[in-house]
Image 1 (tube, rainbow, N blue to C red):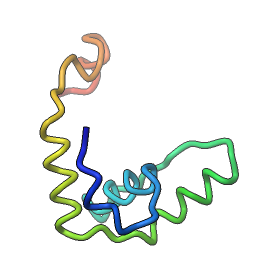
Image 2 (image 1 turned 180 degrees about the vertical axis):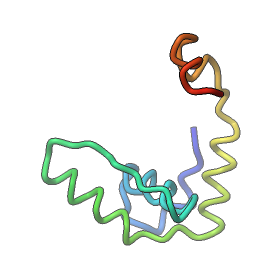
Image 3 (image 1 turned 60 degrees about the vertical axis):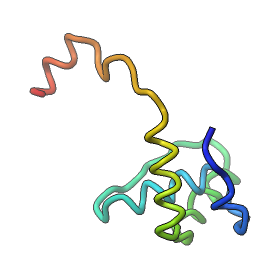
Image 4 (image 1 turned 30 degrees about the vertical axis):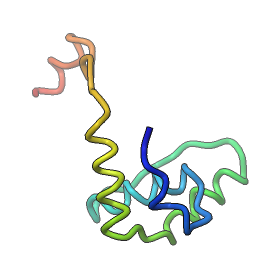
Length: 84
């Protein structure tokens, strides 16, 4: 599991941390989370106001690096369509 110590000082939720991390990756990345509940929409919007520190971003990146990735991204037929 990931180290949550870096986030102990904040009241941000896990989804907000995830969205904030995505927003910090590249300025042109725009996450589009889906929801059917107004409360979740408001929670997601509030993530735009969270700025993770470099230490927090590094902690998340280190935790992600420990997760093994397995399997294909797409089934073989769809992979052919991507041109990759």
